Image 1: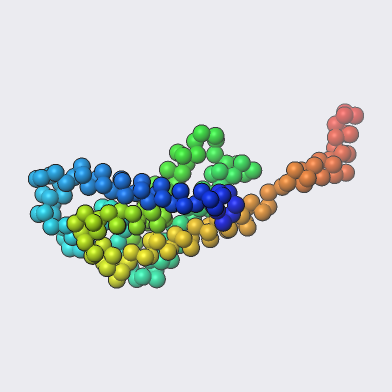
Image 2: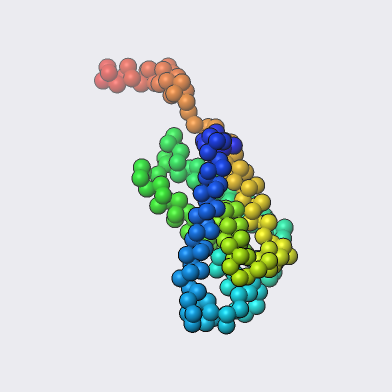
Length: 208
């Protein structure tokens, strides 16, 4: 959003901080709800919080690659999914396009994320946002899972951080290049209205 001029750079650190704090807070709430003695997490894991193995639970909070997934394919997965996310988000909020009915934009974005999650999460969980993945990963490292959250999956942690940072701008500029750049300006619309063919049709209509 900042790179395309839709958000002032002065707001950037506040948005980043708010998203990280929100992700960490959400993780803490989930952890607190399911960490009671004899309940959920403890009953399932036997009190041992692990990243890998049959009773692994770290994937509840952050993304981890499937056993068959290579690092490069995982990076491509994150880039493509985030690019698609931004292309459609730009379309949703583009008033010069068909757009989304006013007030329904959050619903449209929610459905978009749900759709991407259903269709592109088999490889690694489809993070599409560094805060959504790195924030909970930091929390789990402190909450009992340890440094394994960073070393698991061949040091996977950086992929859902770097991938969205590449895919986000890529999707934004694809939308600008392929859609937004072709919107007619007010001058274009005025010129189209004043073209001879339009004038002739207008005159014939009046004569009729």
